[in-house]
Each structure stands twice: as C-alpha cells, then as structure tokens.
Length: 226
Image (cartoon, rainbow, N blue to C red):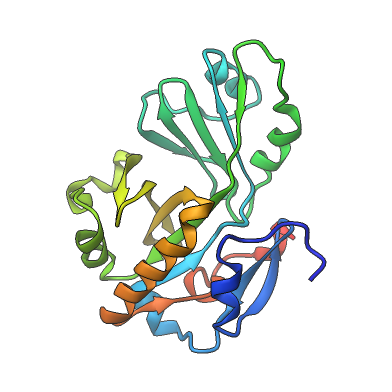
C-alpha cells in the first residue's frame, strides 16, 4: 500500500486476513476474516493507532490549547470530549494528549502549529499503539492484566489512569460510543505488538478476540478521516 504511516500492529493484523481502510494515512483493519458481530459485544480488541493525535507539554501548554479552542481539562489525570468523538487527556499538570475521533480534525489541525521554539510549549512525539476494548466482559480482562480497580471508577468521572498492564506502561480511559462503554489504551508503539498479543490471547479465553473497526464501531463514519 502507498500509505506513508504504518500501525505498530500492521504485521500482527496482516495474519488475520483484514480488509484494510485508510484512517488518516494509516491502513487499519476494517474487518477481519474470523471477526463477527458478537465478538465485539463480548470482548473485542481493536487497533486505533491511525487516529490523528498530538502531544504537548510545558508551562504554556494549557493556554496554548485553550487559545485554539480546545477544551482543556481542569485537573490532571482527567479528560474532556472533543467535537467528533476525540479526547483531550491531561496526563499531568502541564502535559496533554489530544486525539481526534472518527468525526473530528482538531488534532490534525494542531499538529502543524505545534513547532519547536514556542515559549513554554513543547511538542511531545506520540508514536502510540492505540487500542479499544469493547464488550460486556472487558473488566474481566482488566482484572487479569492490571492491578487498578477500573470497575469502581464512576462512568462520568472522566478519569485518565497511567499504570502498568502486563508490564507495559499504558494510559487508560473509558469513553462511550453509541451508548456503550469503550476502554481506550495507549502505549509506546514498540510495546504494542506484545500488548496486542497478550490482550487478544486473554480475550480469546474469555470468548472474544481481535476485531476490526466496523465491528467495534458499527455506527462510525471512517471516511471522515481518509
């Protein structure tokens, strides 16, 4: 394929006979050969690494984002919703992750403006492996892989958790798509294949497994990011 970007999970997904779709210049799996609608309802693991995202930090980062119309979370370790289903996660007092959803272009617009040399504002490279966990038994997977009690977090608390999952540093939050919960995970791209292999293996034991975008998010319009 002629795309310039490659998912950290491209090799693993290629073995699952995917139908590829271009998401902001990165091929992601729209469907997988052995995927079915019930899998994402039970426990699906989906690659979202292609969604546009930017990282920014520094004493002027919050003001820089706010000046560009980005809804900045008031407290560290919380997140707010972007137009189009994206998120703004405040990872620390002065560090942020901004990622577009399927219907937004805010992170994509910010990226060219985020240049070295801006006083008090510094770009943070975000070559993430980004995953979504969907389904009714996601918490069983989380309990097996992480020592954080995610089930006790209130749905409307908009909490961002930085923790370890099977030994991998991850950022975790719970988001809602089309009325159902979706747990979002980000990790360094180099750790992505190991995290994917481990999570999909456990998911299979629980009656789920890897799923494509169209199964995990049947109501999304992916052409908005092509």
